[in-house]
Image 1 (cartoon, rainbow, N blue to C red):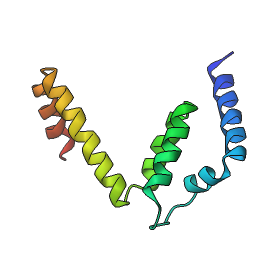
Image 2 (image 1 turned 90 degrees about the horizontal axis):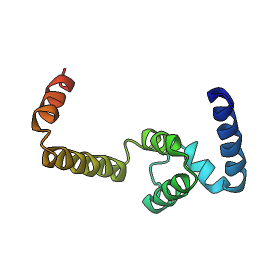
Image 3 (image 1 turned 30 degrees about the vertical axis):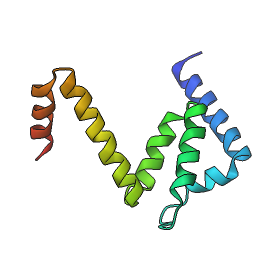
Image 4 (image 1 turned 180 degrees about the vertical axis):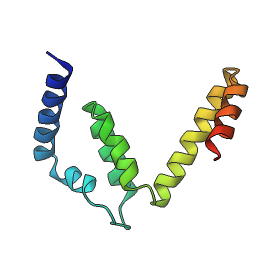
Length: 103
C-alpha cells in the first residue's frame, strides 16, 4: 500500500471510530465550550492514544489551548521535557533553542 492509501485507510478507521464514540467526537468539534470537564478530555486522550490517533490529540490540545487545565498541562510537559534534556547533557541545545524561539 502507498503512503496515501495508508492515510486514507486511517481516515476511514477514524471516521468509523467516531461513529461509535459520538460523545468524544463532539468534544473534537466543540470549540468555545469554556466549561469543559478536564476528565472528559483525559478520557478522550486515553481513547485516542489506545487507537493510535495521535494527531487528533494534538488537535485536541489546539482546540482547548486556552483552557486553564490545558495551559497547565503544556507547562508541566515542557518542564518535564526540559528536565529530561538537561539531564541528558543537552544544556547548550536547550538554551540555544530558547534563544532562537524568542523572536
